[in-house]
Image (cartoon, rainbow, N blue to C red; front, side, top):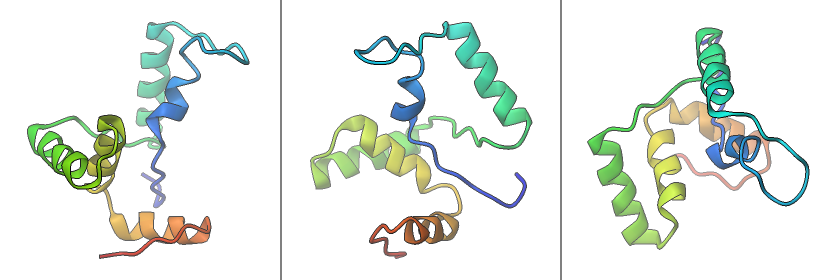
Length: 100
């Protein structure tokens, strides 16, 4: 990537492709995959492959914090990218982030 890591909430991306009440953002599965791969090839998106260790970490987050599985997966996935960069971005965005 070109020096910048952006963590995208997958639920925000999915809303573009799922029919929900409100604005129409329906694109077929092939378009979704094509767009995702294009962004990855342009180095503007990091694809984090789902692995057993991420699933284990996500489950621990679910048990500890009683959050939805999808939210826990996002947190566990975000932990494998450069967290100091994510922390800085969170602070710039006004979030109460702590780097541990």
